[in-house]
Length: 96
Image 1 (cartoon, rainbow, N blue to C red):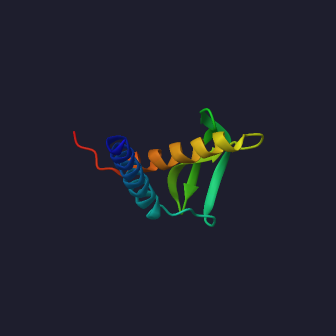
Image 2 (spheres, rainbow, N blue to C red; image 1 turned 135 degrees about the vertical axis):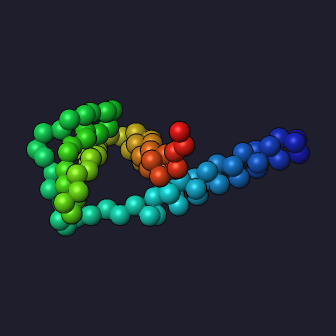
């Protein structure tokens, strides 16, 4: 019984550490509401979002807009976790 508790505790610690690292990745991301201009037509679409071409302070960017209307809470939670993971991946250094 002790081994199962220890294994469960280790898994919880790993999950908490991974979640903490993902949250830290998001801390540096700034969400702008001014000086932002987005096209009306999207150019890509996923399960929970559409991607639009936009300009932020004169710089061309992609804007991800989530479609949450009618989603159950478990789906919204998954969407949030997936987005946090996506940000962490984009912020990670890439090597050739």
